[in-house]
Length: 413
Image 1 (cartoon, rainbow, N blue to C red):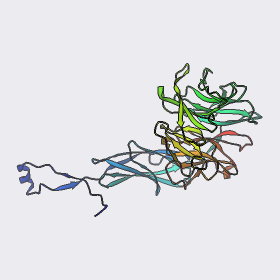
Image 2: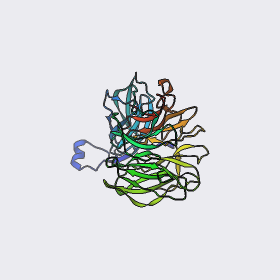
Image 3: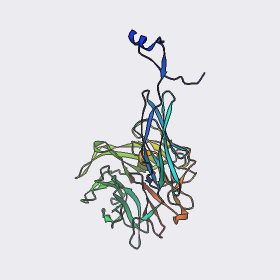
């Protein structure tokens, strides 16, 4: 039939005469169709309790004709299709009922259109737990959290109640031990971002009149200036790529052209210093307002851009030809002013939308945008939320809220 994919067939080998006589008269043109693929869900384990933020699904699958894709379901909802091994995906649980039992199922397809399925059995989503991480001194506020790559520590900025107040970078254990101040500017240091090995923290500072990007070793306190753009330009909101060694990159926004653009510089950190490996370059050259960059877990950058008329979160790959993909659901004709934050495997993005108050939403990177999950709902006491930062393992989200009357860093876990 037209449009119907024919099954792949393989000729049986020509058998010796003795074998033919032993097996009776046969047709040397007999064909067979290969069997369905084998598939096994290796994570989560049956009966597992999973984070209220999300969990990773891992599938083992094989077929003699090749596996074409793996479809992953939570209950009856298709949540991911994976075409390239290793067969892993990250699933958010923000929209799942923690009082119900859920199932995870993987269906593998081969080149013949045959399929096989495996179910992980029941899983339980743990109830949401909100924990206040910082407790600012009177007249201070804490915001702009960033996770260390091992998930054990969070860097953040602390400042007085006015935007002109002195602002510095601190670090705190993710378990909530008293924070340590790591920069000592009399002006404004903020928007910290860890290096891939966790040994350095990039940050913005206007200690030299205009904002430039610096890096500080939180153990030694040594500070290195990484950008020096003149002409009254400001270089702000650094984000450090996940690649190590000489291919490590820091991207940041700059207003040197009269609009916000994204630049980046290649760096090589070691315990003693951070070396500039190559001159800065454009990360995105589109003639629009582009700002608030955030590296994904690959080579792509998530940025806020109005290139399509209204501010939305788009992804660009600075190492490929110019082009951008707008993430559906990240724009409602309003202003998303905070950097996006990506889940493990870049399946979801958290972002801030300003309506009457700021709210953190999560949407799939590839999807219709029809489903948006609220990280900190108002009926749980959060009238606003901002500055999302997804933990490296995906099980927690740090964010900022004024729930106690002043901005503090909270963790959903």
